[in-house]
Length: 163
Image (cartoon, rainbow, N blue to C red; front, side, top):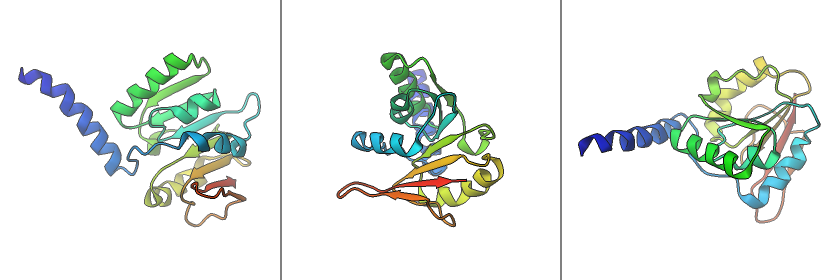
């Protein structure tokens, strides 16, 4: 019977590790996904990545690209969402956002904690190609000036950056 506790422990450990790494699972509100998609302005053939994709709702709504998730529970939820939504141009990877390569990314979406934005900013500056678009939800990236701030009464802000 104790062996049943091992998978539960692994799942809980994975969630705790993701939270301590700067990405607790707090999903993008469903009503704000359309706003994010509009800011991302994805064009055919462009590469989209969502860092800290959680249950995959944004990546699946975008309909193309890659979601990167560190928590095993959310990663499995994202895989289930992909299957149920029949999203053929979507994939999810179980990885740490700090280790995922961003050189070919045209559009990036993140909903992470403010201190995590500070930590990941050097990676974005080093790896994102010129012209890449970055959209953040709720908090701005410290040290960057947004090209546009999407504000809606009673809703979190979205920030668009063009590199």
